[in-house]
Image (cartoon, rainbow, N blue to C red; front, side, top):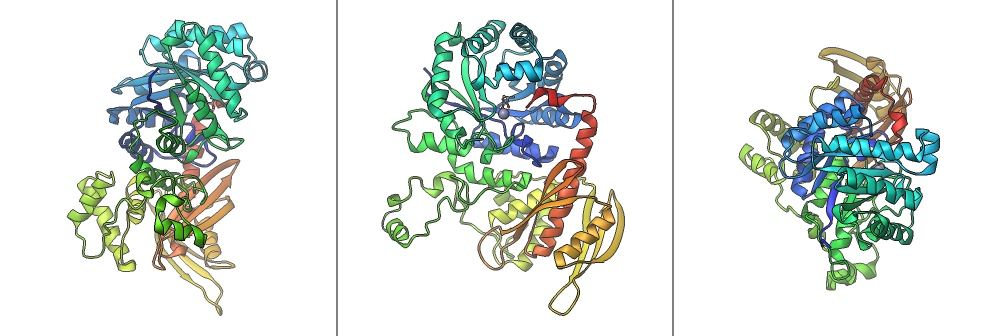
Length: 518
Ligand code: KIV
Ligand code: ZN
């Protein structure tokens, strides 16, 4: 059996299904290119039938990726499969990923289909996908709660119809590791012609077991893992790429299986996902959390100073922490900035570099050293967030112990300038009230968090907001050395994302995605 595990990254598809974590096309392309550098084998770029926006993003990604397989998700309908193919047909290595639920509860209550009908739809969908490409993956949604023999029958039929990858999802995160490993073994032993296909697994994290279940499946013979960066995804998320890869890396004596991942790019990729989606990572998250390599107890610190391996099972450098000790400052020129950004994976056009360089110089006036984390903010906010509806042109705030907090704000809304002033309980409340007035936003602020991007009192503050309007939730993120400006940016970013989601929802009208259950 192969000793390599294929890494199938679904951050752009299942990850984007995290509440509020929408990404625009520029952001998706940037992330796709980073995942290629990271060493991902298969990139699930999206679900083209979901909306015109999704179709466009998948299509653009397909045109830019050279090494990875680019997969597009499709239900078993002809329309979905044709749409998926249209979006990826110009990719170097296009792949169609089609799925249907196989558990009794899904077939009976969601799909209202009999076992025979599900079997028929599987065969028809896989055949149609195979008429376009040899790279076809079939997923049995809710596979972990399906009748085992029916599951093997469906998988056998999918292989016969031409599928080369069979994916076993634990869609609702219900499985436990021993049971899930057993299920993979059962599938290997009871599916006709299973040697013709690769077994993949796709685990959700509802019980916090997604990585453990994935690992158990690999030990039982699965050779593809569907994962996301930072573990983002539907509900409690998916198995996280960094956890799985570092398990295999760190315990290579006991788990002699390789991946293609360049582990030193794990941290930068994790930061990029955090930056683009606005989804923070919990500090104690394995591998990529802020505390993952921080030793607090004196006894631990003493041990680590004497020999890091006393308390560290992985070196921080292995996952790309402290990777780049070169810092830029106000004496750094355009060429140094371009070279540094290129090393970080940002290949900017002259126009983009000019924009980022201007922002870099502004930041140097406020901050002595500019770190990679700061540069990522400049690029994501300056280059990737283009052509948005709302933009801040000017912000002035007065506050203190003896004055009523007041904000004056000038915004551009679709290129038109508007300005106004307002009061609030505090400076941020004043800014938010004024922006809400100017944009006519009827949003509810569900959450507001502030943190520092790096150490030091001159660090940039990073603000994340969670906004809700008409049942749609969007995350917004903003950074600046001044936390009031960062707060305003986060709010504006959230409003832009809400607009994007509303637009996508309107496009979806008539296309009943709820029925797909994903
Ligand atoms: O969780 C799930 O079952 C999925 C499938 C579409 C693979 O995301
Ligand atoms: Zn999923």
